[in-house]
View 1 (cartoon, one colour):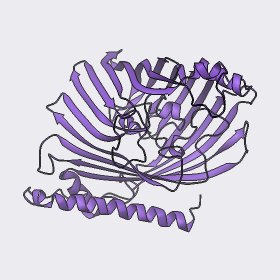
View 2: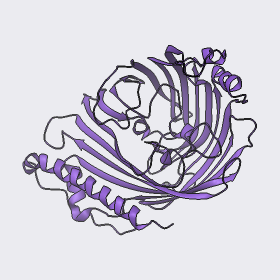
View 3: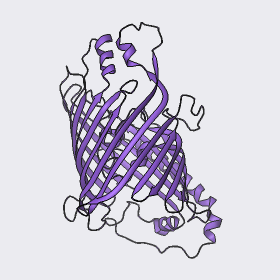
View 4: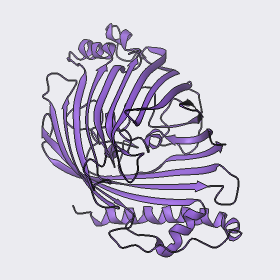
Length: 435
């Protein structure tokens, strides 16, 4: 894969912006750092053994981490195309750069339990995020965070605070995909695990990609309760929360029960989401009375309820909290104005499928999304087009060449909602470099 000079220059600018933010943050806490005891020792590792391509920066990286500052830069490239189905049967190239910065106020010598998290994202290239007429994005990494490429966006900028060992609070601009960073099956931004949006961040119809709000959680072992309260609009492009809650509020409550089956980690989860935001009333449009120039009818309020189950079948020897196993997720929604009526997602995946390959990851997943019947009637009435539900499957394997370089192969087969079109078969390659 070849990156043109313009793309290299843009990536170079992103790196300098990211480093500038890091330097300013470090300078702000320099006086507190000076009061600490001796710095961490320099860690020297070989090129193929280190966790990142650029290593420990002569000991600077370890020292910053000791004082609560972590910086990660991830460069991802995709080469993906439509093998069969409707659309051009060509392969295109695209990529993205993700910058992550986390600050621990306690380690920095300020106050205990506090934190600041930032996530910068930039995409480029000709590869589209949705191929073959699929309803949901087939490549999350090339579809989020914005509709346009060549745009640098800060998708997360939030404060966090821990209260003891059991409670925490987050507030600010939050990227919903970031919340799934440590999930063994979902999440990964389309970079580390699955590519299809259904497996990266299962759509519910009531959670925008990026939102302003607050998330509180408390552990009452073995149950963890989490409450989200957030603005229902997508705030990806907004750097300031103007008009906060002008269009309603959304409430998200989940309960996670952690236990063991056959001596291995198992989690059961229940969740409920309700938004007061108004949406297009598909049922009224489907009656066919709407005329050109008239305002679309609205319906206030929408909900989604769901469950999730995960169970590890194998635990990695080096890290028992990781491994591979089975997962199942289902949801039921109102179907109007929510574009989803119900969904089911199932599969198997995780890390360390083969002995000695604990850094590798894999996944095999299937999904069925029952799209709103009222929405389907709209297409039938107004466009004389038969639209049904969508189902699909994805399989991937990510091979760790070393701890900072990953190469993945991915294959998707999707039965798209437009029934007059043939199923889409999509294949792709992905490389990830951690700087």
